[in-house]
Length: 177
Image (cartoon, rainbow, N blue to C red; front, side):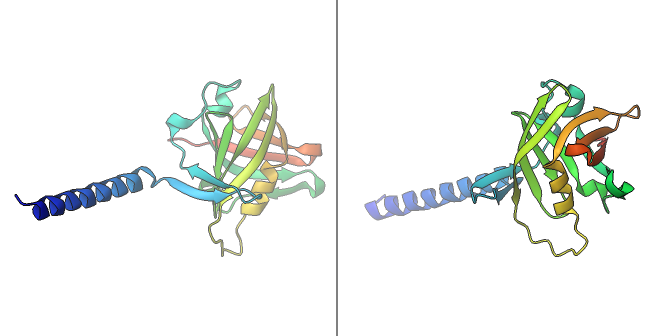
């Protein structure tokens, strides 16, 4: 084999290897969405699988499941807000004191702190998908989560998260897999 053939063979092998690595990386990242925090920092938001749920924190009932938003009750005016499609709004508590939630437009991630039955959710960041639905409830839902203070479980197993300053409550049901 002459030098020219050796070089051509090496180049072809490099191209094949680069293609393999590219497609392998694409497969591994197909569940990843890139978003930004309000400060412009880039974050990676992955789809949540049940193996990523945080089952080892202070309350495994809260953190060991995924939760679907079913209604919000506001004390002022006795107003109730229901999601148009509850399957779009799923809240998960992830290993490492992080939470993830989906909405009718984007995916969000943030931090949570549990102290007894107190719950704080902060550092919320999202993907930036265009949301052209005039009835989208994303902003209402996310503003509720940013303003939580505690939680409890009803006898029927539903999760109730209380909004600060006695403004109301958000009710979630467990998502069955």
